[in-house]
Image (cartoon, rainbow, N blue to C red; front, side, top):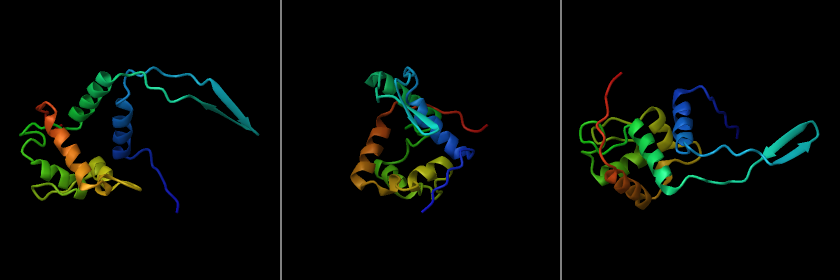
Length: 142
């Protein structure tokens, strides 16, 4: 099996940005361990998270607001039930009959695994959490 990654696809760039933005404020760690193997050299750093839970949660909320994951009834998922959110995460089918596309479709389907592969209990837990986020009215359109 050969996996290919095109870093120039919009949904891939959005996914990368969403993940890296979770770590906004994390100091850059300099490599303190270097390897040489033939003509190649590699550097390694220890896994270390300097952000506390409050900072990570604030970053998560920023990413969620930017991507319109808010329980606002008019511009988000506020009118969806917990069950509808969990079903959407598992199938990509919205309550209005539309389907997930772009980055969300990619996250649901996954490359090797996605939200569709999670247990119903895990999807329900995510859905319940999403309903607890303070609603933010997002600007719709360009």
